[in-house]
Amino acid sequence: MQRQFGHRARLALTPAQVRVVDGQAHAARVTWNLLHDWWTMLPKDKRSLAAADAAIRRARQDLDWLAILPAQAAQAAQAAQAAQAVLKTYFQAWRNCWDGRADAPAFKSRIRSVMSVDIPQGRDLNIVRVHRRWGMVNLPKVGRVRFRWTKDLPVGKRANKGNRISGARLVKDVLGWHIAFRVQAVEPVAGPHRGPEVGIDAGVNLPLALSDGHHFDHGRTAHQVDGTADRDKWLTSEEKAKLLCLERRAAHRKACRKSGERISRRLRNTYDQIKRLRATATRRVVDWQHKTTTEIADRYGAVVVEQLDIRNMVRSARGTVEEPGRNVAQKAGLNRSIVQEAWGRTVTMLTYKLAQRGGTLRRVPAPGTSLRCSACGLTTPGSRQDQATFVCKNPDCGFEANADWNAARNILHLYRIGHVSIPAAGRAVVRRARRVKPAIAR
Ligand SMILES: [Zn+2]
Image (tube, helix red, strand yellow):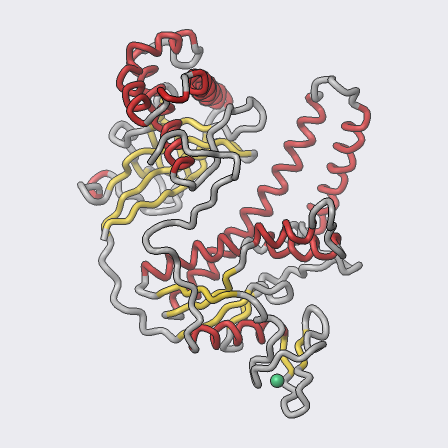
């Protein structure tokens, strides 16, 4: 079974190399913007996939203006190749839009867009492992660079037609430049997983409650002393204090800024420090999620989860202008906490990890799972005593349990009686902004 996946590793660049890659990223962004300008100026009836393909083929001649761009001026062939890479991503962005997977591509701003450089082919990367923890890779116009080796990549003698690295992308975040390898691998088809079925609820008290009584906890309380959701629970108390201090400083500097004035270097530094702390928190979450989802996928053959639309939950709390939501702050706090548990990412990880091991992920429709009693099956008013405890108010039952655990049992029960959501056959669910129209008839 052929599998494609990405693997991201930290690059060790010198400040001079960082400047070179920054220059390449800016050149790529400018190329994108010029291309977007050309495309949107084109009469609508001339915009089509065929025109796009023709543009890609013409690129070598048409993109003379690229020679003025700094980082790529030296070698015309390489500049054309870099432009080709941008063209490819640009038209892929339009295809994603036309197929309803994403919004229409737009101009990329200098400060708000993610800086990235595409390396379309893997054959010149020349990856070698030089140390237990380090590998070396060739980057165009930068040279030989070290990267953090955290996964056995199919390189050297282990590379063949099925197992290889087909390209890479350099991506910059607040913690610096990273390289994301595109990896192709042939994996044996897994036999059926013999593990038991389990329902999982993403709770606020128990991050992951399992229907068989187990639960996974990261040992960080979701609520602050005053009862509001703690959005920075993945930071230590010193880091939290530091973050608060930085946020106050940023607010003060922002208040002192006259309108229309450029953001000062000091304010931008403060913003960067805040972003760095948040990125650290995100890495801790992802690490925890990887460990727990691997353990779940190893242990269970069928995992049942609730089908939640997290985007809608956040939106509904806020309400509309005519009909503002009630208890917006509390709900938003709760919702943000759910978002922060990054449920979507957990489900994505579970999906592919289970598939690799021959297991399956099932989704059941959400309503009522947190209010119904999992022992007698009745929904009685007031049974959800507070966030943490569920006490059945049916006089014959009186079942008492942790609310998240009760919900997990309900989820498994819904699956067993056949309430499985069936995804649309062979196609992702279409999500298209109302104003975005397909540019061509399909
Ligand atoms: Zn009951």
